Length: 265
Image (cartoon, rainbow, N blue to C red; front, side, top):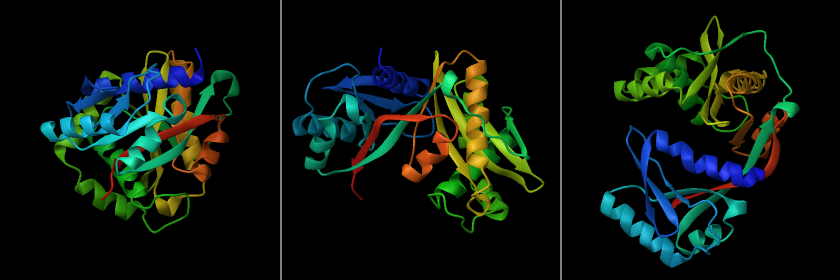
C-alpha cells in the first residue's frame, strides 16, 4: 500500500474515536460525540469525480443536522474536490503533508524537561492552554504570548473540554507531550495512534518562547513514544512550508498535500 493510501485510510479511521460516521454521497460525514466538531471526508479508495452537486447534498445534510460544513482530505487521492469546493463557494486551503518512518528518525533534544504527560486534568488544561495561546499567533515568529497569557487562557478552558481531554488520554487515543521550565509548560503536542499509524497534531510553542527548538523536541518525544508503542508510520500536516521545515529536521518528508475547506466567513 502506498504512503498516500495508508495515510488516507488512517485519516478516515481516526475521527471515529470521537465521532460516528454516515455516508452522504461520496463523503463520510463525522458527527461528533464529544465537545469539538468534526468534518466530512471523501471515502478512501473512491475514483469518482466530486461535483458541486455532491457538495450541495452534503451542505443540505449538514444544515439538517445543524453541523458546520467543513471538509478535510488528501489532495493527491481526491484531486477533484478542491476545484469543486471552490466552485461551490467554499474557502479552500492546502498544506504540506509529511510522513516519517523509523529509519528516517533524527531526534532533536532540548535541555529542558520534555515528557509524555499523564491524564491529569490540571496538566492537560495547561497543555491545551499552551496550544490555544500559540495558535492565536500562528507561524514561527517570536511573539508576545508567554506564561502569563497561557495562564489567562487556561482559566477560560471549560471543565467539559478538560474532561474530554482526560477521557481521550485515559483511552490512549490522544497522547500529549509537554516541555517545562521553571515557568511551567512552554510547548505541547499530541499524537493520535490508530493501529500502526499515528498522526502528530497540535504541536505548539508559546509565542514568546519560539526559536529555541522546542517544537522539534516535542515532535521528537511524540515520535519516540509512538515508535515504542507499535507505530511504524507517523504523519502530520504542517501549517506552512516554514513549519514543515521544523518537522523535516526530525526526519519527516513530504508526500503530498492535505486539503481543508469550509464556508467563507
